[in-house]
Image (cartoon, rainbow, N blue to C red; front, side, top):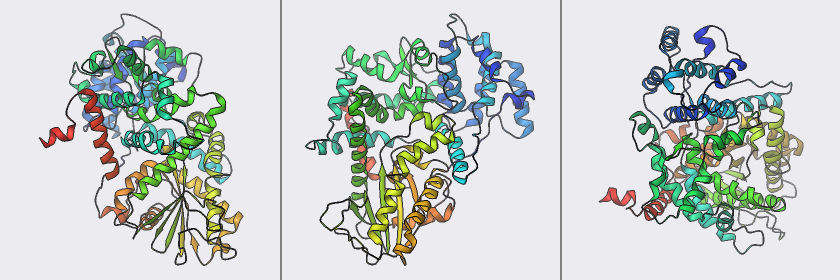
Length: 569
């Protein structure tokens, strides 16, 4: 369940807001390496998987990092105001870490005890500056875009959708789904291209990523107990056959030294909420170990690294075809997911349906017939550009979303398919799909990018779908069949829905979604869905099977028994 939490700012504790200049002046007097070493573990503690008792953790951090006077003042205000004592949170830590790379010099010998007042002020001032409200335009769509712009970084920074499914998903795609297209002219050999770009076999990279994951997950406990095992030690892979050159190639993909981080951001003034540098390299490289700077970025790195390592290595003329191939295998993944989840009775799934008039034209990426409802599905495997996502410019975000999700492909694409397949005049039958008993059409857009489950994103895309309905006169053309609002979801959402499709109509789940959130403004699972609540929590069984496979991959590499086999013994 999602919880809403506020944090204390400098202006709350001291009565007046700090300026960005004051914050930057303080940062320029602090040592880069020390700030990265201090706030990386703080961010680990603040992670959603960090600690069950947040107040106790916050109190401990305030007492450890703040000078006595500022700590007393902060705790007194938080208690008396009823606001609580939360100072530290993930977005604040990412902001401080990134600004340290940009502003902090090398000041060898500086110790935490010497700068506790500065640490207190920096922590509180950062909270004055980590959030901003975008300027709203005059039209309804402009105003929705401004809300999207404000909430996307908030949603990501607060890990509202943090799960490990991306690792299992990528394993399935790179080892099974993509190779199935090896005989096609537009095929890209992901394993070969990754090894050429990284100098590390993809299977080795996967095994290494899986092997360090328990160390990442245990980071918060290690920090609090001052465990010497904190992080990933350089000698962690000594028991394996990993060569030193392979180890260094792996570390280059994951980590940077303080100086390398500084060089990466030098001369750049990043957008307020642009923390993509941590997605690029989520670990800090110290002489003896890698320290996780951000747990979520660490967990997501395997999926992101495969695509971006290959993409950046390709000649310009091959980048667009590779992106198209990546989108195609994402559609194949959704096909596999649904084909192996539905019962073909309550929910009948038809992957890549085609019109029956001999032209082999595809209707959409998939259709689910659920009772008297047909769900037309379109999948979008591309990513929204970081500068549009995090730049704080609603107009730029609108342009990118229109390009990737609205027209000519996406929202308008699915609207045209609905009109063509269900119009009363000149209807084009679909091969193997009987729509004669269908009374309701539900359009669904599934995105690979997590933005598909962001606040107000569905609101915007549905508004554009209503534009498409009016432009194509769909209601009149297909009547008396009724076409509902458009439902948008990320791949993470459809993965979570799959275990229910064996005994629950997908149409019922989507109807619940529309009833529980009439504006479609919140993430899919933020509001209760009656069709699912009575059935309890069900983990995605297909991903669990993949997790067991991944456990065997990591165990074989580390030369230990898989976790499940140890548990059985």
